[in-house]
Length: 190
Image (cartoon, rainbow, N blue to C red; front, side, top):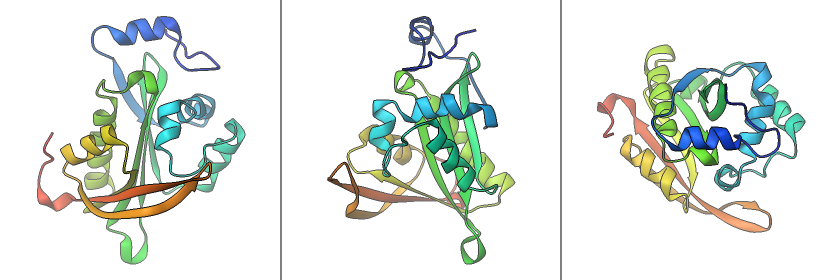
């Protein structure tokens, strides 16, 4: 089995295995013992870039964030040979927004462009439609995150708003797009 290094992510052997041929991606629900590996995933430069909030200080801060989310979200982990390489979350709304789900997807930097995000998106859409009976999915993405924007557009999401100076990270204002998909509109364009 390929193990993730404790400091920077997949080992050299994992990189070599991931670089040739198809990944053996498996999806499963997040488990409590995923915290350290998922913190390392979120701590990768591209994942940190995609965050709208300040990056997590350490694994304990990440674990606290997960606990604070409560039990309503559905968290999915993508693995390659048992090692977490992706994370997706579906957070259903409540009361007058019980038909809406907010989603987020993160993929380990070394596995971008390999279909991990698409697999996670498919899983979120299936869960939203069949398990949660949601008919609208929403997300927020940094305007300069072109790979993520391309994937969301491919899956049928539309840009509904451009929010200038939406957040501030490290003293820099961040612009975001809000995007949504009407799940009743038919299959995605992927």
